[in-house]
Structure formats: C-alpha cells, structure tokens
Image (tube, rainbow over all chains, first blue to last red; front, side, top):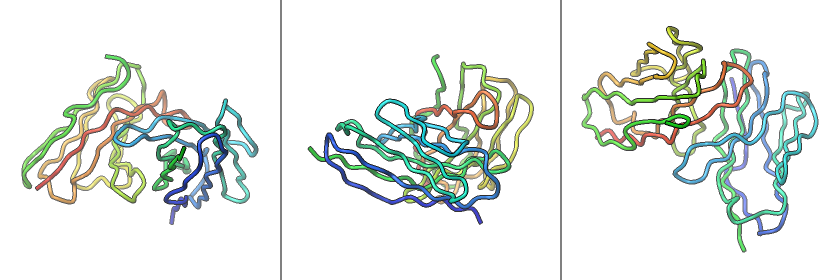
Length: 109
Length: 113
C-alpha cells in the first residue's frame, strides 16, 4: 500500500532550527512536496524535490533521498508565524499526490 | 476573482439532501482537484480533472460526482449526503497534472447531520 509517515506534533523555540522528517512508501515516484497549512486555512506550497539533495529557499530548506524514501523540511530562525501544520506529499506513478497527515509545529517564545 | 474561490464557506446539511460545492479558478489552469481533509488523516483526493471535458476518480470517489464543462469551474456534488461526508473540502488547481504546484481554495466546511 501507499504510506506517508511524519510526526504528529513537534515543539520548538523561537529563533531555533527544527527538522521535520517524512518517510514514504508509494507506487512510483514523481516528486516530493511540502506544504504549510495554518489552522483553518488552505495549504500553501513550500517546496518540490524530484532529485536527491538539498533545496534551499530562504529560511526553509527541503532534502530528498529517493533511495531511502526519505525527506525532511528544515526551518531556520523560527518565527512565531511558523506555527502551523507541515504536510508532506509524494506524487505517485499516476501523478496523484499521496498526503501525510501533517506535522503540527508549535513555536514557543 | 484572484486565484481560486470556493462556495459556500460552510454549510450544515441534513442527511439525504443533495449539495453542490462550487469551485472557480481564474488562472487558466488545466488541472483541478477536489480533496477532503479529516482530522488525523492526510488530504484525500476525491475526483480530479486533467482538462476541461474530462474527469477522473481519486482515492475516495464514492458518493461524489464532478463535472468540468469549462476551464474555470469544477463543482462537486453530493447526491445524497451522509454523516461520514462531514469534512473540510478543498478545491485545488495546477497548470497541468504532474509535478506542478497545486493552488488551494479556502475550503468548505460541511457538516452532515
């Protein structure tokens, strides 16, 4: 079956760094996406990895290892507004996104 | 209109009633999607459309139907609502189906009693 695993909840301190992990087992691979979702709002796109390695975009970076079925999202210099859920999604062989349940990130002052 | 809109924002519906959730995008995207989001679960694809005039079934299509008469609109219909269809429904679009960013509408919170 298809499966995406990510931690349910994480807590971090303002100004610190946090890494949110995601492992996936899906039929085929056409890219790994990360989205941010604030409570009561729609998901918004953060990153897309299709090749192994690290993609950096400002305070956010995303890493992919296809051989390990593993990705992480790295958030630096955490701000209170980063409190949100972070959704990992894998695009399978049918170009359908298979979504994890999301990681709720709580930022404390 | 800027981006993707959904209506209504929220709705309480009696079981057995018919309901259509509306979705409109102005980005001229070819692909559109309907997801439901339930607590503790990832987003699940209900139906999708690769381009105007075509639709396909996603992971959880039973009890739902869609149409894509033109590029902009992608309504989702519940023919006879049941309580298990209580959820938050998101419409999304992307330039094409594939490795493109999906843009999400604000969601419709539906409660079926």
